[in-house]
Image (tube, rainbow, N blue to C red):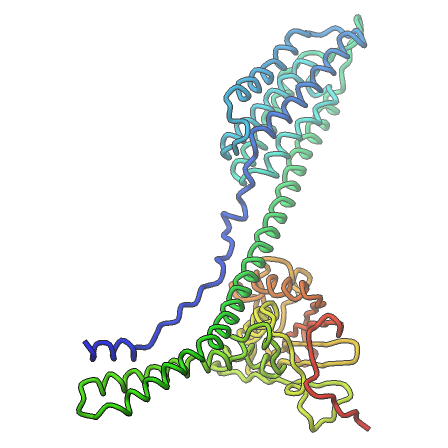
Length: 466
């Protein structure tokens, strides 16, 4: 039993590290936000009210003759659908995508039938056929939204072949030239497709931005949790140091009082060694900068930058760190004289920028910090091929994931969602983020803070230069 206990204590512990948030898939980007049933019911009531007022105004206000009861019958179809949905008792539920597509297709067909009964393409209210397709494109997945657009297009085309005369004064008729009606048809079809496509693209970009911001918040929450765990470890190290010291003293006294031949001597030796091991572990926890609590969260700037670069030191590419400060002699190291608050946002963002630079660098990466009286500049540069011209204008948005590699544009590399997250985290702390290509070759990412926006502290007052 004693030997088994020793083996268990000596066995290394496996450290668990949580992974990053999963990137958004193409399906998640193209899927829409489910429509609420009550929303469609309210929109349909609004359409019913507008259609009824227009029909009654034309019939009794202007005195035009047309088949009023047919029009009211078509409108009543929407009324019956709304009543059935209302009495179903599920008006607050989210509609399935196919259910919303069917209801919007019904609205398009009902509107087309009403237009056909009141002049067809001669009726100026044909423009309203754009509405169901636009709502579907903005709120439904691509395949269902496209289905509603197709139904709207086919319903519009059907008005060319069937429609009753436009309501007009008795004894008079109104008829547009055939060429004009075809032009009006083309305008409506283009309007349906263009407006639906615009709404789909705008909704897609909004969903992409929302998912990217959600990923940013998830990363920030994870970093804060890790930082909180580090502070908890430091607090535990402080609190547990005293009782462990007492245990170790008592164990040593027991060991001195026992003879080597005593059966308990080996157990006392084990107790002393393991208590010392616990004290060493707690000492390491309290000394590591990344595990300090809020009292000890300031660390030398160079140590912070080394922590950023440490995961990438094993690559075959050199990482150079330089820190310069205004009014500081060249023989004094600003990186050790200046401390910075170890903020999770900066740590994650800078590691993302350094990782991207390592991926594309030919042989060297530079991390440069320049501290001035009014501002602080931090840049990450590499000697790689640089950003391709076609993405420089889009860089900084979510899901931009192409960069020029060896004279070609590659995909699947960095600078996609990771760059967006890092940029957003830095901007959240007041930084201005700039990026581009270096004159000497390679790319750069430069962060600029005002001095009062970044938590840096001079550990020693610098000696002004002559």
